[in-house]
Image (cartoon, rainbow, N blue to C red; front, side, top):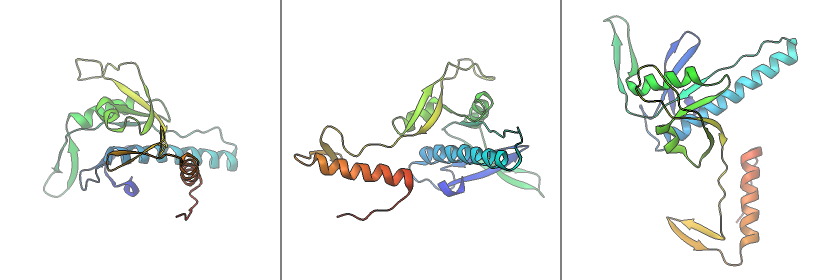
Length: 193
């Protein structure tokens, strides 16, 4: 969470609440939040694999993640001796409801979150949820993975919003795109000019 610019604001039993874009906004806080959630789920699977190898135990640890995007009230709560910073409001309540409806090992996001990351992640629309405190059913999406966006499509390239044709350079663009896919998958580095 911290690696991607988020901050844990509270622990509740075996759960936690984190915020992105409250202390400092990066402009892509929703994307950062989803990347952190995907990495958390991946690390949980690594822990399960490690425990299984070492103990042959049938124990499977899992977590559910609910993410909502919106306005929150941010401030101190508590008495004069024990104050803590927290966030409150409908956005927080909806995120909590999404978490409780998410499948084990799943990440469930709201409509407001999906609007901000459409095209960046593989997301699957879920049946509307009837949740406590809401008159209308809530639309939600299950996050599968982050997409790797192609650099080039239709033999054109976008620079500063201007689409430019890459006439006769398709092979070179495919080579660069393949290097970027490999870079994303393996974390190798390349130098090319």
